[in-house]
Image (cartoon, rainbow, N blue to C red):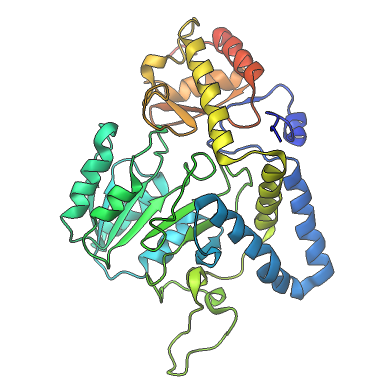
Length: 393
């Protein structure tokens, strides 16, 4: 089946027919089927009441794990644990390590991780080494070189950088460079999951991978996850009762018990509604033929069309020469575009006044396409760009 761009998002489109949402990297519109998933969560709660958790753990969660494992080439869906957000998973992972935690990372990590690690460093609980992302073409080699020197408890890096759309490069190269088998390696996959075809089969026994459904998985808040390699962090200090939900008891020696697989990183009671939305969207994507590769090809085509159009459009807001990274080169690129602009917030406001939704991070304006866009949307975007203007300032 050949998927139809734009089909299946009626509820979000009808909510504001004049809105041109070009921020698929942020709050991605939800497909119509997610509404059905949301309703089903409510109906199951009404039907089952307390027994809904039996259903969640026997059917809903295993389906979520299976979808994630299939998308990432993971050999065992049971290594996947879910949480309301990736910050919760980060802290649970950090709780496995003794302070001061020696961290190797980049200077381009998402705000949540960077804020947390800086705060820990303020109190001497973390020692952080940052490898510059720029120049991107050899970022993987430089990070691998730093990792090869050893002496780290945690190596953390993004697959796709949130403020540029640039891809770090060879994941296996970086992971293979880590000399100490006890070092935790974690990939922030939030801007890669469901945007770039990703096969973790070769590193599934060595690296954590964290991502979620808010962006390209089109499922909204509350459905984040981590793949947890066997043997790493068997007993997180930050632990909730769902981490041994099947036993609900201590081990024979009196120590706190943990379930096997990714469940050892579980927290406590959460709202499972997001899992229903995620599962509904994943089934829909498969039914209509949207593979991750097809999504990426579609978005890459729209990116090229948009950037080629910018070359011939009179606008002071965005220019191809201001791209943080250009997807028209020969490097792999994510599904978002980032434009450097000294008045990024003003550009975002000007576009919002023209009915165009983008966002900005610092001095970079971010724009992103998705399966809900087609060539007509790019044309409409060019027209609104031509008519929009920056406010004086």
